[in-house]
Length: 246
Picture 1 (cartoon, rainbow, N blue to C red):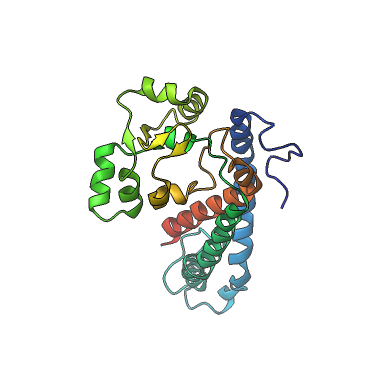
Picture 2 (picture 1 turned 90 degrees about the vertical axis):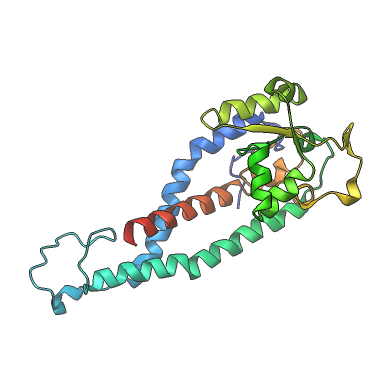
C-alpha cells in the first residue's frame, strides 16, 4: 500500500506538525471507507425478503436497515444478532492479525539512538495512577514506572525537547498529559541497555503514537499510517455496532 501521506520524499522531509495535520485531514475519508467495508461484510448475510413468511403481522416497519429497531422473532433481528457475533468474533480476529502484521513491519526500522523517547515520554496517567495500575497487574504500567520518573514541572519537560513538547501540547490540548523521563539516559545512550524493560524494547508501542521528528520509526509509522487508521476506525465502528444493536 502506498504511503498514507502520498509523499515520495523521505518521511523526514515533511515537518512533523504537517504529518499530523495530514493524518487528521484524511481520517474522515478513512472512517467512511472503514464503514463501507464493514457494511459490505454484514450485508452478505442479510436475509432476503423474509417478511413474506414472517409470523409477525402488521409490524409496519418500512425501512429495513441494519439499525432499525426490530421486534423479537423477526428475521432482521436475528440478522442483527448475527452481525454482533460476526464482528466481535471472526472479524475482530482478522483485525488482530492485520494489526500484528503492522507491528511486525516495525522490525524493518532500526533505532537511530536519538534518545528522545527516553528524554520525553508521556502518559495520560499521573505517576501515582500508573503505580496503582501496576499494583493491579497492568504490565505496561509496571514496566513504565520501573524506569520513568515524572518531571517536576512542565517547563522542565519542555526544555528536554521543545519541538516535540509543542506538538504534544498543540495536538493534545483537550487531554491532560503527564511528562516523564528516564534517569538512566546518559547523553543519547542508555546506561543500563542490557537490562532495559519491555516498555523500552517494544517502543513505539502504537503505530498512531506521536513521535519526535528525530525518531527513525517515523518511516514505519508513515508507511503503515493508512492501514493503522483503517484498523482504528473499524475497531471504533465495531463498538458502535455493539452498543447500537446489543
